[in-house]
Image (cartoon, rainbow, N blue to C red; front, side, top):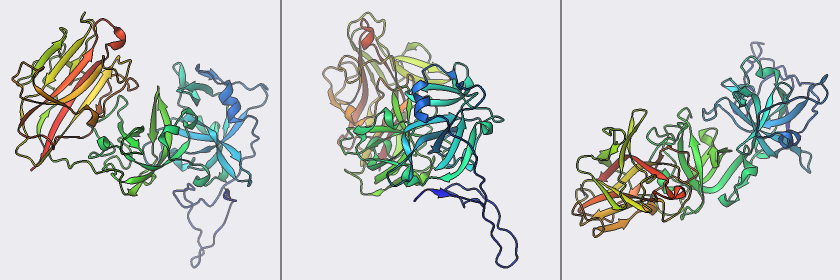
Length: 472
């Protein structure tokens, strides 16, 4: 059997007759010398707690007020690598046909106001959880257990969590915890909170040429989202979330193909995949498709920090053109960050098509040119709609006013853009857009289409941190 039972062992030193030192007993350290099993009786199943929990944080109360209720579970996450913070993900435990203990199909989380939780609750550790005095809640279709914070489940206080979470001496090997997935289209809510290994995957082209944590590419929670895919066409993608505290935060995103292990989480309606440590990322195989073009040195940048809040966009050398309707691009500032925005809401025009166009950029001095930018959205309700969208064009033969008759090449399909599921005002990186097929003087144009009369088609888009880079 693969399940390990660590019992009290006394070692004699070979020469000096001293005892070996006692150390941590996680899978990622030397096993501890001692473990005293708790004599706890499990009275409830994780499934029972999940089924009775609701979207409202509810204080758990045992049916028998003279006895506490306990569940058992196995730890599948780890904060050792810095990517999880004060949260433990656990699964229910089942016994397979060979009598081996395995992680079941219900994932849930417990929040604890304590760091370095891996020292007591390492991956594979079986634990008992005393429910009485804790709150349960279903959020993003996930069971959460903890103390009350406001109106939701929050962290168990430091001085209390060891009164509710008890270690067992049983450690279940990771091979009995992990779920292998080769088809990203299989992802659904049943995998939330469970340990998954994606096989035959790689990061999208737009995720490369940056570090896993990129301060210039963070979401509303301050994390960097790159994207996992399993095909050259990138038909299916899963957001891969990295904290600035991850031990691999400054490592370049791997360009190869292979496997990535982590916990599937969900923020509102968006899945996010979170690895525990750098060793969870094993992309040493040959990449599907060609490597993205090399990114050179920046030679044209705009961070919009000179923006004046709530004014018509008017940067020197740039163009702001209303092709259809009356609405133009605006300058915006939020918490000292300047950016440009197009918002058709309330314009009164049924259709608005607004262009923000860069000054002319000379490509002839470089053997290859790329560019990146950041985009956010708010109030976007529909995706892939011709009536409410952001498009990116490379423009030539432009006289500064006649955008209709200028030569325009649509490169939107090279960019990663926010969708209706992306958190409002959360800037995401476009990924690298290749301009190697262009030469001479060109402009980069950002065109937004939206309605000023139909609120379902009035989603706004924001642009920031444009960087054009070239290889000499």
